[in-house]
Image (tube, rainbow, N blue to C red; front, side, top):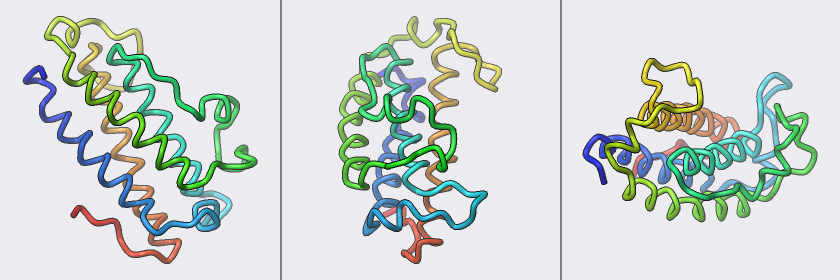
Length: 161
């Protein structure tokens, strides 16, 4: 792994663990319950995070298609998501992409990280490395949302352990 990726890799590993922790003891009914009409439910946010992680693998040069890509094609908010997959299906898809992401982290080169990204994220670094940093920050943001929604569902707090 290229040294510039090591701290980002640590964030990815931590987010993996925290995401799974947010889904712990969560049933499908609780995952689909919205605290209010203005707030997305856990299933929607978790699907978005899974889909974004598959996207991250592709941005790092890997081949990965989210198993929920077709389901999410025209979905922009929880109200658009008619029949979310089960919490277990979301968990399985998250775990499946983990190995792909690990391989991408291991395969990155200095030259690959310095390539100009085709995407325009709201960060100053327009390279692949900048895209990876943004996508992991985006993931962290949503893990925080999942942690809060978990509490709204009456479950214990997300734990770092």
